[in-house]
Image 1 (cartoon, helix red, strand yellow):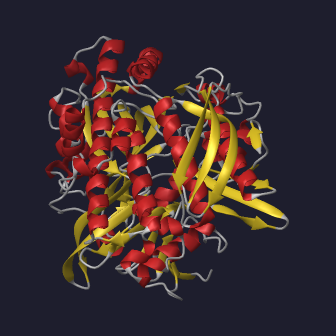
Image 2 (cartoon, one colour):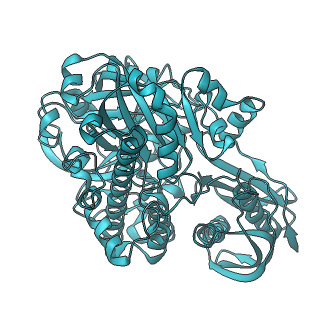
Image 3 (cartoon, rainbow over the protein chains, first blue to last red):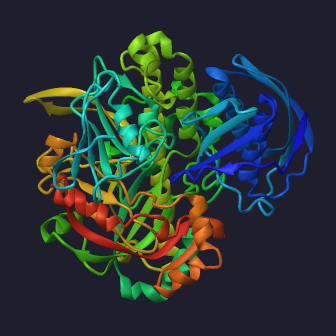
Length: 144
Length: 479
């Protein structure tokens, strides 16, 4: 399922940095929401206009949480170097070995995204991508 | 979490389960037993080769793996090195530059100074190009030479700036070839940039002197203007930490069961002597050198900015680097343990080295009084200069606090800042502020931080570092 900005996420209220928690019916949906929570934080809630679509594969682990962290690390690097942000995301596969996703990217706009956070790293601390109740939960802390 | 009071503001987390040593926490008031940062102190005590205690300074707060404010010394031969024990912003640190200017005389030119600093030193998300993008060869030189690279290129308050930095402004174990292409790409155009978050440049006045002898040695006089610069290794350091954490997280089982059973994946570590450990140490030290070069270039830009804005001579400005300290680093140091000298790797994550009087590693001008310990507070109140003590060498591997420590999450700070103009509130206190984003000002407002006066009082009371002077902000530049 392809998900577009904005998507719901919870702020974990980390004292020093920023943590998010998302929920989904499947692991893929929760992972896509983590990707879009990352984009929402970096864009300061501003719209991201998709300009191009890319299919990305990342090696994952340890665990599904490690795969989620690996994907977000790749997206953070692309933001730092190319100044691009996800506007939409579709997860084709996700497992402990890795993930394959399609991401629609748009440019970070200094004016539209002026209130965006400077997300500097994706941490493993308290990272989750696991079943909870009838669905899945994803959780990541970003260093800012 | 069980806690036992040792004396005064010092508390112990008794050893239990897989902890190799007890935890020791300096605390502003009794620690809250449910504070997750205390569990992190206990977790750090599981690391292979940790010696004496897993320590936390009074500005402790919840970090990743290690708490912010954490100190851990490892046996240099048989211990572990943990990228999480250094943190993402490798050698994030602070420096103070003193001047010959009088605060009251500067007041009419303060806006021009703040505006000039804001123009000349790139700030904010992804800030870059303070100086032309570095070639690979130049970047190698930065990664190997640290602050000395920038001094050689004329970015300095004075020619001996590097000697007035912790470790002389460079770590000799740096291995530029261990810094990946991705890390280089993130850092090549960021030398001389401030960044965002809690990084800042301040124009301060020396508001009060507590120790006249040490203040004289440090060149601090009441009413004098000083600059503070707080920043780190920018994207390059983050990428170095990130890559090594990822590698070590995947390799946990490779180093044996004691490395596989750590209570938090963010504590991923490697034996210091292993190839992975040595590669991290080489890259981390190169990133530390990058951070020193970054602060040194900003120092040169700030000095030029003041000269230009005030139209005064270098002699009239009288800029001198007081000192530059690291807040996030792991360093090989010699400490006395059980009466004998021992080589250890001291991880300081959100902590400051504070070597005492007579230590040959303290620059000669300060050796009689102890190392300057620079403790920034928040942008609306004050910062402190302290001096290292012999007791710190005995009790904390020569370590002290590093700042105020956050009290509110960024989200909560934004909620409390809603409807307020932080810039106007600061202006009402005579503080000029320039920032890229109103949101940053709300996130970084004084209410979001603990009172640093209480933090340094704990360190002073415990004899770990002693108060020398208080600085108060006149102008603040934020990302």
